[in-house]
Image (cartoon, rainbow over all chains, first blue to last red):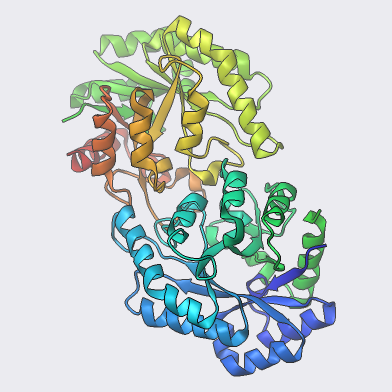
Length: 263
Length: 263
């Protein structure tokens, strides 16, 4: 079975040191990390912590938000942090409209990638544009389709700019299989989360563990593996009810959910 | 200014007879109707009511839901009802997954259109497929993109199968202008609603009057008019707070919102 990576956002309130211990104890060899808990624990300490536990970091979340004033410096720092952690990909949530028409806001994202791509190559970390579900287009990411994300990547080598593919954001797209094949080695990070209805009051935190909702995972996983994707697969689930539970339980159920959808 | 049509769902709890009186009194010459209130008042009575008030019916909502057992008979009846009301278009909400993988559920929609297209031509009412926002893909419509809707229309003449284009559902799509041009005379019904954030607990009823949210209406309206679209433009807004107000006020504010975004 393809190796599993536990994205720490799935257990948002579990301290980093416990995530690492818990993963090592459960035989999980890979984690996806977030900048805030890493900064809280200390960047170098975090890097040493995961290394000493024998874990690899599959991605760092998140850069992007290109409409913010300090986007350039902040994204450069995020690339440096990913490099120090040994993460091959920086997940980019590209930012919403910030008061601009859609096309202008997308141009701003393109400009951001252009400015950052050289540094990404320098430090060996891929800027991994995450196409997000269109319900987040206004306020979180104007990159609201897989096809649109691929267009943004096109001018750059795959090592500089790639894709974070999260099933939650793209499962509804009738072109998803065609686009996965087209993406090829652009897929820098592959994440699983399920679509559950009804959506909760805060749509940001209503994702489901794989197998609990409407996503048909088998064909999506198969299609991504067929591109030659050779990194671990993350499970990253934002769910307020899940977060309220003890970290060990979340990890256990996440592993079980992962195994249930793997072919 | 392009003529305005008041979709009665914008004032969900306003009785049909009052909608018609209110529109006539306000100088509104077109309405979009829904099957349930029409059935409640009586189909022939409804047809006479709008005709006597000098109103035209721009669309009837809704057919579709092709996963339901009686989809064929129900959609035939809906076409007949639209014909009796003089509505040129039957809006189709095509139905969600109904437990099937996405591709199969879309095939079911294609099969439904194939079965119904001859009757649509016979009665002179266009089956107007509404591409819906992808957040409704699981439970309301697997036709979750404008491009996907156009593919479903392609085998048929525009008089048989066309598009209901609602800004709320498609504004986020980076290809929307290209697709509007491609749609040409396929656009059988054009509806305006705005995208407001945060989304409410029930995402179905959190749309905004035009101008209250993030949709950039000017270019979208211009693009649709450039296709030669020559029907009135509907405003159709599902909003729980709006619905709680008196019908006359809703109509007044809807007219004002319409005028504010028209070029």
